[in-house]
Image (cartoon, rainbow, N blue to C red; front, side, top):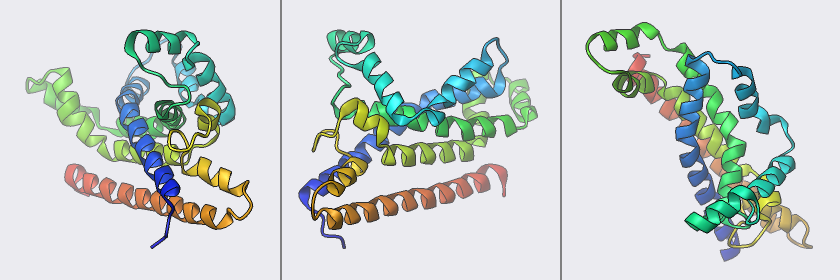
Length: 231
């Protein structure tokens, strides 16, 4: 077992906390946007599609800077949230979760959208003819059939959030115990003489967590496919 220092354990625990929170809050929006892009046609759809996937092509530092000027304490949105709701993002772990959620969001939307597009609409129509309203059809038919894609999107978002660095360090800096994730801790240790060993330990932890997430994703996707598709 790796002998991590308390500071290293803190970075690992904080990374997991941020990744879980980022993924959990991104999921409802991911399903909604995935459904919107998969099932509806509207003016400006291409623009919405581009905005959703923009974080994938922008330098992460640019995304972090945009978050800072929008959600900083003196920024319009950040000041409003701080004054009326007591929510502060800049230089807090909540800001790290926001940055990670934004960076992982496109990776979540893509598989959800593809899963929704692949569903046979006749199954939904059949449920509707039996008296189910649209929301009940969505909850009991559409979501279960799209579950493999949802699982894939959740894991991809979680993995991206777990390894996010550029947007996070730009938006919330690298504060030990508050915003210093595994990636930020590794970067810090590589700048310190003799820090290579500690950085190597965290690298192994990061690899293990990412690998475990991928295995869990594959297992859950197979279980969902067997249950709902009989495959």
